[in-house]
Image 1: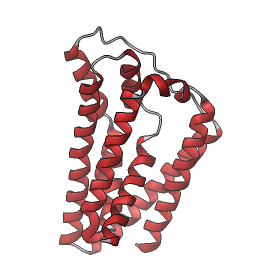
Image 2 (image 1 turned 90 degrees about the vertical axis):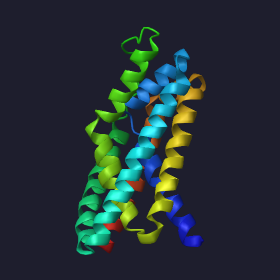
Image 3 (image 1 turned 30 degrees about the vertical axis):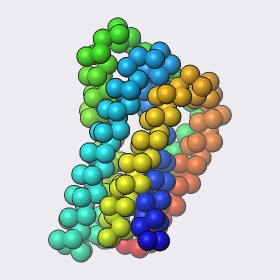
Image 4 (image 1 turned 135 degrees about the horizontal axis):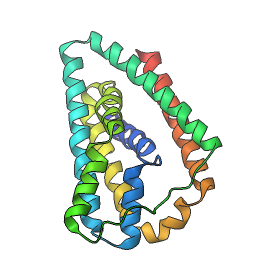
Length: 204
């Protein structure tokens, strides 16, 4: 039971560290929340998309490792290197923080356009595949039989983040517009990613 909880907590922490980075998807969700336009639809699309991608990452990488144990070393090294680079970029952002801009093209109140925009920002973003299929999949593979608990923790982080971002937007918009707030968040992201990267490389 303890190992399952540890894996779930690891999935939650790793995903939360990845998901809070400034990006077009977060900006769009926050903007829709501030405008109160189709917030539930946008949030649900983001959550279910993440759940699908995380499941593919955890199951796909896990299957590869199960079929070829030597692949775990390769996956761990690649994932560890990616984490270290990601952590370095987050540290760089922490020293030069930027505010999250919530302005942008209007959706015109069209539900169809809002849905298509949300899907595009999620599925046409190459970083989402690196984060979920490779990175989270690599970390999950290191948890062996607990990789699905890792996946559950990962999806839970996504659920909480997008619910808070979408429905708490009016309260959070001021916070996210302050560069100093992103300095703190990116500092935490950098520390988490570097720690995870070192762990992956060390255990490869």
